[in-house]
Length: 258
Image 1: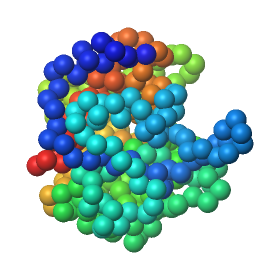
Image 2 (image 1 turned 120 degrees about the vertical axis):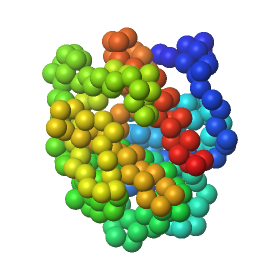
Image 3 (image 1 turned 45 degrees about the vertical axis):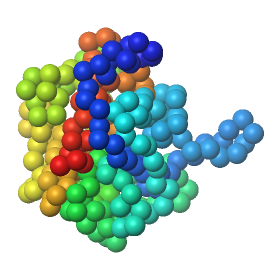
Image 4 (image 1 turned 180 degrees about the vertical axis):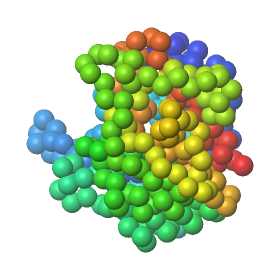
């Protein structure tokens, strides 16, 4: 695990944020499982989840940079989004994952679009074809010129980690030092204006950014920064997902403070 002094060292070079709030969606991603007493508990890509499927380590990065964490259990509205500068939606549910999925719709997509246009920073982290909903979620992403293709690229066989490797070059606008990162079984992207690719693997668009009004959207077709692949216990040391999470977090904060 990346703990104690290792975490401190990892953030020694990061500039503190100006404050603000990052809100993680718990509405479109609304999975639960029974605890030991049989009661349902929220899990999978949530702040407080410290096992492999949680995003507690990414949350720690926001904590370290002075950003307050929040969550949104209901559909987005102009009023509740007004309280946040960064809004993250990860892995929208399918019927396999939730008995009653909260699907994206035109009304919600319009609310989110207007919030971004007014200056919000939206992060869209989809998943591969077997593990997320695409048709309805694209109602939102396409408002920014981003279409999730619903495929499954970088299918890793066993522990052949290099099958999931992407090499981001130095001088990148987000990951400035260059990073070797691991992203497996992800959806690629198809773009049109105002979206543009910020990382491609050959002809395949892996990461995209869109600027709309005063706001910003960042998209990747995988949850990417969940604990399993940033905690330092699973991947070989050559991969830099944790450091990349710090890079992206700083970039999001700057975008929210433009």
